[in-house]
Amino acid sequence: QSALTQPASVSGSPGQSITISCTGTSSDFGSYDYVSWYQQYPGKAPKLMIYDVNNRPSGVSNRFSGSKSGNTASLTISGLQAEDEADYYCSLYINTTTLGFGGGTKLTVL
Amino acid sequence: EVRLVESGGGLVQRGGSQRLSCAASGFTFSTYWMSWVRQAPGKGLEWVANIKQDGSEKYYVDSVKGRVTISRDNAKKSLDLQMSSLRAEDTAVYYCARYRCSSSSCFIDYWGQGTLVTVSS
Image 1 (cartoon, each protein chain N blue to C red):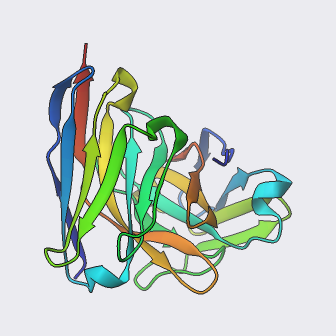
Image 2 (tube, chains in turn cyan, purple):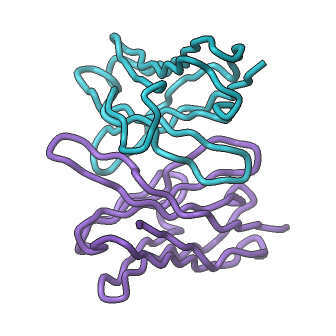
């Protein structure tokens, strides 16, 4: 199964933009554009924020955006708000038999 | 509204068995792959198992192979996870999840609220 690396924590002030990275191996990412991102509040279930690198589900704020370059995918949150403080996980679809998750990043809004 | 409601968690002895269930509603259950994902206390997410729409294909993370069986009943709109030979490292919140697949990729788009399994020694 895939190992995806995320920073343990990031922080930012309200109104700022932050970026969370998700790095895998070239064999993981390769030509794949199948990265998704999840937001999780303490004690709650994860919520899908981004899929297929840069697509937002209905109802997700356009302050959330995704991108990918080489072996690294990124989640950017612009106009940071207090409610954005949560854990964020990246996930990579390899095939129907395997789904990998990053270790998670704790976002602190200062 | 998509709803996934897990049940069956609790305290179990090491080496014991536990069966988790998930009741699905608000979507056509039989047309989706389904998954179980777990999260150990204070840790990250770990995919555990997938099952195809008709139950003909099942896949597991290496650490649970041979000890865990995923199954579904499309008539009842339910998903199960039968776990045996439980270890301390199986202690986690187990999430039932809908695995949405397009022509090119799959991802989890809905999660249940989770059910906690605690394996005691």
